[in-house]
Image (cartoon, rainbow, N blue to C red; front, side):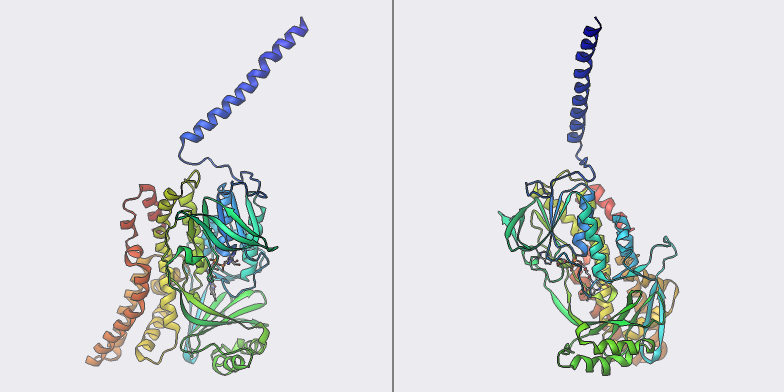
Length: 529
Ligand SMILES: Cc1cc2nc3c(=O)[nH]c(=O)nc-3n(C[C@H](O)[C@H](O)[C@H](O)COP(=O)(O)OP(=O)(O)OC[C@H]3O[C@@H](n4cnc5c(N)ncnc54)[C@H](O)[C@@H]3O)c2cc1C
């Protein structure tokens, strides 16, 4: 009797238990299907060792943009295959100053630990040096922010390597060393990439979405962009040792002499010095000693006295001098289904404001928010239409930082033209005014308030200030003529940059988004705020 009871009990309980589990799984599935928002599990496991058609995204390049993007998409549950040409720690002279606005983006992405333990240096403002020892200090307006928000300077390679290490720990990222040689395109849709592995094998990888972030020397941009790359000037990078900046925790911008410089600490014992060589000057040869002569006779006299010995020592160390061509490129991407171009591959600006990484990180945030509601990426045409918003939503921040960089580069470049000298003088004096004037410019510079309208306000205010200064100095028809020339030349410096950015995209992006759904407009309003 007892035996029969136990048996009966088992025959009742076990099927009911499995039945309940099946019912639960079925209900979960139905809920998931009914919702158009994906129910993506964080870190959904996927066999990263197999190319079994389960990759959601291929990312080309694991530099600043690629590695941050990989972590971000993987955290949203996407299965990501990253292909990077060289996984060893990069040793480059780019991306060494992360503006406070860039750090805020890093916080939003949950990647703030990637600037920890890399001997990053705290930067709270800029010292600006002009001729005859005149200088001023402009601080970032950081009072409103958490104490942890400030600019950071570091070795770019250490930062990138930290992000790559983080990516490698996520189970749904496959990080592979290889060089992507071309995109696989079928009937106008990008299906994946063709790449060469570390051991020389030529392979194909497929995914519904390929995001190309192969940097400023991109060889894939030609498939996805019509942009024209301009080479604006050359840069020489030196590392100064055993010296201290006059203003600790400040970067320095030296705008005296024929070769402007930016100087900032990249570790507790090293100071980076970037010397700009504007056209028509040519990059002197390092090998035949021209570079040493140039640095010693032309540049050294402008270097602040406390850095001069270290500068001359660095200039004499031929093997450690690095040079680079500076490229400028506004966005003009062809929206090809199945692909997207981001980072320096899609847009470059002058590095004088150190804004490139802030733009790249902000782009990743915009992209994350656009991709989040999509359950999968399997409809390339619908996705392509959806992603067209990306180039509009990124505009307010990117165009503000790009425009300021382009204008500042022209301002710091030496010129024999008296009107350009007056513009340089007016900009410097405007920054010495303090209050909303220098705080406002510094907030834009630091990526804390990258608003096109704020930028326009400061251009306008600077124009008024310069007009008043000139008329007070020369209260005559000659003064009025100088004002007219000033405004004409200043307009000629600013307008082509704004035109290249797109006036409507920059100042009236909402009109381009008018036909999109309300949530996207809300995103833009969030961005503008
Ligand atoms: C001289 C200079 C100084 C700068 N200083 C600053 C600064 O102080 N602050 C700042 O914010 N910005 C600065 N920038 C800009 C900043 O460096 C860039 O905006 C930023 O690095 C862009 O990131 P990215 O990922 O697009 O490119 P990168 O960081 O260059 O990464 C591209 C990656 O793609 C890989 N790759 C390339 N081709 C392939 C391929 N075919 N297959 C696979 N992988 C490939 C590369 O190995 C690399 O790892 C500077 C730029 C220059 C030129």
